Length: 174
Image (cartoon, rainbow, N blue to C red):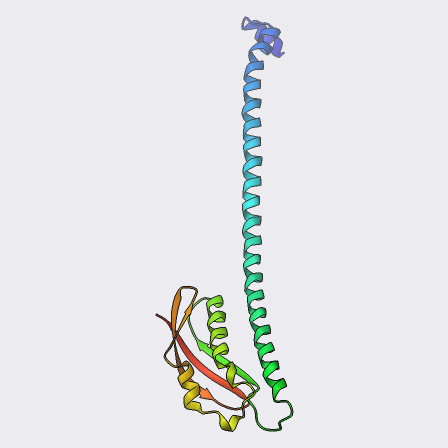
């Protein structure tokens, strides 16, 4: 029926297909271009999404490794000091807990806490009775810490001297 319709309009069946073929080919090219472009864009978006997820996980693992390294270093220092005085049966400082009041980044917080613990490690293994609390406060209060090109000032709010020395310290960025 179509052929008859085209024949009535003055064209033949071959003419119809000859005129339709270039149109059909150009549409197929356009569809191919859209399909290829969509596929490439989909791959790029997928790669970006996967890269973002992987980088987020790497950052989390980096923070965790940094925290664990800091904890191991503290435990090693503590163990060395306790081994030195293991034969004495007196009240000795066994650990130091630092409670920071700091509004910065988690990694900055760990670095500041490590620097303050390093400053206080001389207290480990000492007899509780012989520790002068004024000197402990003077070691930390109003001190300026320089970490990664940033300066911080520490203020001691509270101090408890027992087998576990506890310090509450306010840290502000200068």
